[in-house]
Structures are given as structure tokens and as C-alpha cells.
Amino acid sequence: MTKAASKKAEFRPNDFVVYPAHGVGQIVSIEEQEVAGMQLELFVISFDKDKMTLRVPTAKASAVGMRSLSSPDIVEKALDTLKGRARVKRAMWSRRAQEYEQKINSGDLVSIAEVVRDLHRAEDQPEQSYSERQLYEAALERLTRELAAVEEIDEAKAAARVDELLIKRAA
Image (cartoon, rainbow, N blue to C red; front, top):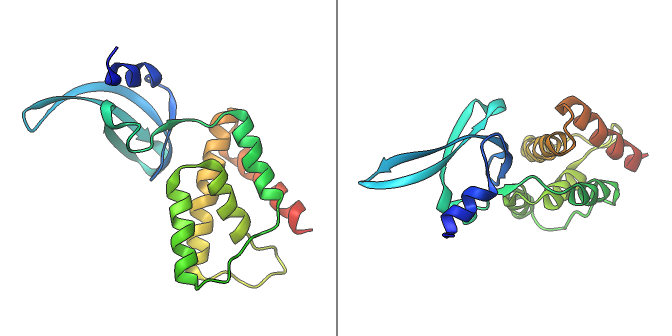
């Protein structure tokens, strides 16, 4: 079995997958396309919420970090991460922002949960800056979308579950 064939077997149409730079999407189909005179087999992935379709060569799927949804135990680990204390380094904001961005785009659910935990603000805490809020919301969205997909619940329920953990932690 070739490497591409084993990739194709790993991901099938209708499977939910995580693409690091965009979060949770659903494979719509696997199609052949001619690109620069070469036949390529592509996963066609739909990101409904962003109204976006992405085509990823089946042979490059793992190289770009595309993966299946997290297992329930990784989801639990990510949710446990939310319960921990925020760990904010004393580095300059630009440096920390870069690190948060890398964690979000890593596609690793536990790293994304760390960003949510570290940037979460309780009602009685000072306002977030615009860039903090952007990073927080991006991480929160990735976390809730994957939680919803893994647990087969809607995103509102997933968001409520994450909120509950964050509020409990802040109390």
C-alpha cells in the first residue's frame, strides 16, 4: 500500500478533520485534479462556518499537520487544562502573542486550551487589549468547534461547557 493510499484510507468523505491553520472542517470528497501537468489526488475540505473550501493533496495531508479529531481523553486533558492557573510569562506582549499564535496554529487541542486559559478574563478583571481579545476568541472558537465535533453536540453547548469551566476556575 502506498503512502498516499494509506492516507486516503485514514480520511474518508464526511470525516471531520482538524487542519492546523483553520480548525475543524469536514471532508466533502476526494477528487483527482491536474495541476501543472501532474495528476493530484486531493481532499476537498469544507469549513462551513468560514464559508471556505480547501483542497489538500492526499500525499501532503500529514505534512501540513492535518489530523483526525482528538480522542475523548485528549479532549478531557484539554478541558482539565482550562481548570488550571493561568501561566502568563513576563515577556513582552509581542513575544507572548507570537507564542499564542503558534499554539493556536499548531492544531494541538491542549496547546489551544492553554491559550484560552491564559487569556481568559473574569468579569472583575481588567479589559483585554484588542489583540489579546482576537487571540482569545480564535483559540476559544477552535476549542469549542473541536469539542462540539468530538462530542457530537452543537457549538453553543460546547461553548457553554467551556465557559462553565472557566467561570468555576475564576471563582
